[in-house]
Every structure is written in C-alpha cells, then in structure tokens.
Length: 196
Length: 354
Image (cartoon, each protein chain N blue to C red):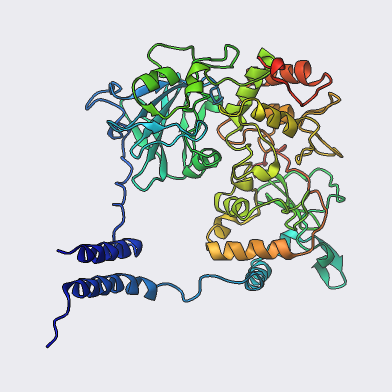
C-alpha cells in the first residue's frame, strides 16, 4: 500500500478544520447578501409605501372623498408656500395639532415641518449620503449630529430597520422625482402646555 | 519537519483566522466605577503618576464648566505622528476629561481596544465626590446647582460618537495643533500653559510621540492667519465646530470646512474662508428668501446667528451647549467685522500671514 506523504496529511487536516469552522457559519448566513439597484429600489418602495412615509411627507389636500396625498409632490415635505399662522395653544389632554396638509405639527416640542425627502440637491436629500441617512434614523439627530428629529417622526421604531432595509429605502428615495421645496426650519415652543 | 509541512500548517491557521475562528478576545465590560478605569492610584483619588495631563490651546465651550484632561499610553508604547493631523494612537490608549460645575460632576472616558476600535463612556460623580458611576448608554440628567437650570446633561453614547466620529481620528483635543507650544494668547477660555501639562516638545522628549515631522518641532504648528483676531477666531471655530464641519468627514457634503490643520500651511485657512464668505446657507431664518454663512455686505451672518440664537433647535453646536458663549461669539463677530468685511482676496500670500 502506497504511503501518503505527511505534507498531504497535514494539509487534509487543515482543510477539514477550516471547513468545520466555516461551514456552520455559512449555514446561518442568508443565501443572498447583495442586491441590484433595481431590487433595492423595489424593496425601498415597498417599505416606504407600507411604513407611512407618505402620510406626513407628502402634503394632503381635501378631495371629494376626504383628505388625499398630492402625489405630484410626493415625499417633498411641508410646502414652502403654505405659510401658517401660529398654532393654537394646546390644552391637555389635547397637546398636538396638525395642519390641513398633515405636514406641520405643533406640540410641546414646538412646530415641526416634515422634510423634503426627494433628491433635490438644494432643498432635499440630493447631497446626502447613505451614511447621513443611516445616522439620522439611528441617532434621531439631523444627519446624525445636528438638532433632534422632532415628533411625530417615529424614530424610536424606524431606528430598528436593518442596514439592508435602510439602504433600500435611501436608494428608492434617491430614485424618485426631485421636487424643489425648501421646508421651513422648526419653531421652538412658545406657549407652555396648559394644565387641565 | 519539512518546510512544506510548516507552510501547510500556516495556510490552515490563516484560513481559520479568516473564518473567524481566531478573533481578538472580546473587551471586558466597561468598569462600573471611574476609579476602576486606571485614572487614579489604587484606593486613592490621586491621579496616577504615569497619566499625562494636558490642555488644548483651543478648548471646547461647555457652558462654562471647568475641565481637566488626561491621557495614558501603555508602557513602552508611543503615538505615531507621521501623519500630523491623523495621529495613530496605540491599542490601550485611554483618555479622560473631567467636568466641574462648582464640584466634579462628570468624567468622560475614551479607550482604544485591541481590535483598533474606540469605545466611549461617561461617569457621573456622586454627591460626596468620592467616585463616579458609569452612566447608561442613553445618557442622564443630573442635578447640579451651578449648571443652567440646576440640571446637567450627561451625553449619550450616540452623542459622543456624533462629535468624535466626525474627524479622521476620534481624539479631538490631543493633536499637533492643539498641543503646539506656540499657544494662541487670544484663545477664549484657554487654560494657561503649565509646566506639568504636556505639549509637543515634552511628549517627543519623553518618547511618547514618534515620527513627528521635524519641521513641526522647529516651527510649532500655528494657524496661518493674517491677524491675531483671525487666528483666534479660526482656532475657536476649529475646536467648537471643526470636528463635524470639515472637508473629509460625514458632513463633507455641506461644504463647510472649519477645521484647521497643522500640516497644511495656509490651505486650511483658505478653505475655511471659501466655505464661509458669500456662501449660501442651507439654514434659513423664518421668512428669509436667502441667507449666507458670512455675508459680504455685512447683513445677517448665519454663522454667528446660529451661535447666539436662543432657539435650541437652531443653535450651534447642537450638542453639549445650553448657554451661549458670549466671549466666543464676540470674537467671531469681531473677526467678521474687522477682517472679513473689507475687500478680500482669497489668494492669500504668505507675506500676509502672521
């Protein structure tokens, strides 16, 4: 019987050990980890349209069947042309007020205006990077470093999106039509909430 | 054993390492008490002899708190300073910054781990001042009689990262420019130089900095400004804004470059001026049709408006500040009125720089 050289024996043991280590790890990894741009856009569109993004970031008008989003201004945030009077004073337990467009919200935090999520370079997310987007959602701060993201943005829930879903959402948002719309800066609280 | 056998064994070891079988040991959890982080002598409040005190020439404004800072390097290890603006700190580096409002209230802690990453923590001092306890990741608000409103906010871990992950290296106040022996006498809120505070020369002499370009010792780093006021204002903006607003970090898309560099001659000064003078501001006050960071015609400057506004949703910096730094604002306004409102040629010549 022909003897196997010791080099081959050691190599076989090493390969077996490597396979033993790597194989279980691969078994737990999803079979697909990279997606095409088209796949990301499709996934992002699904998430955006099922997670309520249009509810606040697309302005509403009153139609024959009630309030409906103006899809020609899809995800462009509070219309800069909609200059609002001061919000009515809040009185507990009613502490929040929304504009008719559903894009401006007054509450104990002040007045928040929903952001322009379209890829317009000057007024939307056109100059944002994936990192800016992720850090905003994960930290609840504008671009991960600035002022707090204000209610009613559900940061506490959205920060749980996976990295893959965040990439899909941002890829989709960068693919939609750009709308030039400079959303006003938020206003600080001016009237303390009246106790009941 | 033949060399080929050894080679096979090495291949196997490399494969197993690549597969994750051999990883650096997970770091120990953060100590619960500050006294367990290595700052003090055992059972004592005395700072250890091998811990180095320092004070940056341009300090961060923190609502008027008094601050002390220390660094500890592992024995026999040094910081590689071959890149003057991106020092490489050895694994095991630890830094502390203590904040006092009448009494010690918080100490922040940074540590470089075995895998090269950094971790950040905050410790809140007890009322007796005997020790400080690790603050939860979400931060905390603690009572402090001398703080604005009697309350002091300890930052969350995310807030730590917001500032410290902005530049190339997450250590902000321990750099060639900040430790230059050529200290700026007009820097607001700066600690006076002290013999027991480290600077570039002492650290090189002690062997704690290696590969520092010789010219930075011969001619210590200095912001290459045209006037003393400009030098101090640029230093102030560097320390308070430049960690986020720089040309290479997460916010580079904003094209606002307020960081200064030890190794750039006057390039960083020019870059700052170009990003400010006549540059449109994305931030607009309510009702304003346009706005500029620093307006050429002397009308409203968003740079200083955002520094001094009472609106917490608009104020800069957005973290760690509740009280406007009137001295810092006055310096920047003096610089804009005195140096930036006259006809300005951005092709600076070295003869203009002091």
